[in-house]
Amino acid sequence: MMNARTFLSVFYGTLLCLACNCLSINSAYAEKPLDFTRDIRPILSNKCFHCHGPDGNKREGGLRFDTKAGPFAESDSGEPAIVPGKPEQSELYRRLTTKDDSEIMPPADTGSQLKPEEIEIIGKWLQQGGHIEGHWSYQKLVRPKLPEVQNIKWVRNDIDRFILARLEAEGLAPEAEASRETLIRRLSLDLTGLPPTPQEVTAYLNDKTPQAYERVVDRLLASPTYGEHWARSWLDLSRYADSAGYADDPPRTIWAFRDYVIKSLNENKPFDQFTIEQLAGDLLENPSDDQLIATAFHRNTLTNNEGGTNDEEFRNAAIIDRVNTTFAVWMGTTMTCANCHTHKFDPISQKEFFQIFAILNNTEDADRRDESPFLQYFTKEQKQQKKDWQQQLLKLNTKLKTPTPQLLASQKKWEARINTPLKWTGTTPQQATSSQKSNLQIRDAKSVFVKQTSEKENYEIRLLPASSEKKSTAKKSTAKKSTTKWTAIQLETLPDETLPGKGAGLGGGNFIVTRVS
Image 1: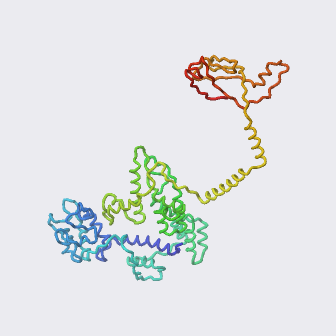
Image 2: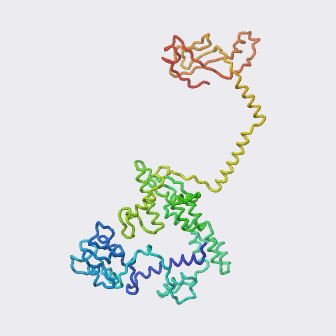
Image 3: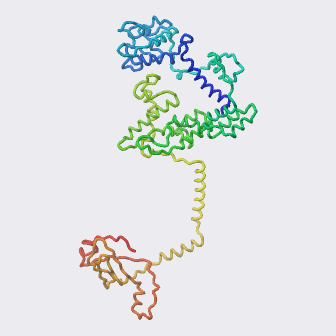
């Protein structure tokens, strides 16, 4: 993990530098060189880029101020817009200060005239050499020289030198170190988002060793709550949500990505690996479940399944979102403008936007209602449980496939039984009735004749086993209960010359037996 002192120096040093920077904005421009990005470019972009910027279709006079070389090139008039160190010879300054309404820039009818203080800033900038540089975020990092400071005893590391140098330049002195109760509260809130418990405060106050503070830092960085707290910021950047957005905003099952981010932070995963896994984890050789889950960074787009929507339209909207989000998160730059036109502030063309679009336009998702394809995911506990079940199933299958003596004997007995031919014995029904009072006739041929029937009808036929039928002719005093068992009933339909169509059924032979019980 990062050394505790280094972490806090970076964290608080950054905040203090930002605060001090705010104090210096209103300083006199003559006291130090003007910064093109901070002081000049905003004026040019607001007042000049409309006619002298990236849009070639609207560019006037062949002059542009949005590039490093543009202002130094000859315009259509043949005069350079900027002559370093000489405002009076610079066409830019002359056009800003002229009294001729036909030459003043911006033209009077645009309503975008510069304020006197803005013209003064540009004049001082030209006098200082008219230096132009790109945005700081596109410049190569150069390690600065350590500044000299007076209160050298206060300095504990190189970052402290920059903080102290700025404070001394403003005539300020560092505040005294806060109380230990305040320090542990600040530290806990910064690293975990939670205040310390009374027990944690007491333990810190009782720790009189020089490493007491560092131990608190290490404990908090090792806490699971650290990842949970700092994951919030990344999940906001990756537009994480447990729903799909748009219209009815249906639920979305994507909590595994949230857990991946928390786990990565708690494991102190290197940022380059963290990046690779989220942008292209599925393209790694033999990717792990975590690396596949990481690619859900690009499945956090909104999906629209409202009636009448077009899947292809919203699939493209999702890709545009992925382009914009990728550059906002990793490059710290807005890419959205280049979707419609070459960027006004950043050096990004519309062509470059769609080159990135083409890279991300190779996914299987298509704004489907079920958001497929899915990744089947199991936790470590679930994987172990699945493995245990598979082993138990294997043992059970082996046991079931191994015949026992009892099973063999039962199998032999069963086979002998089913191989015994059935003996069909006809028997004359004792009684036949119909739910619709149809005319049923019991015939000697051991059959029931239905002379007329309805479309839906229930028949009830009372039968006796053949042995009972024979014994019923004997005297009642000698009759015995039959031991014959019925194992099956066979129902036959018979043709008859008197029936319509000479066959069973209504008018031609068709009928349906719904149930026999």
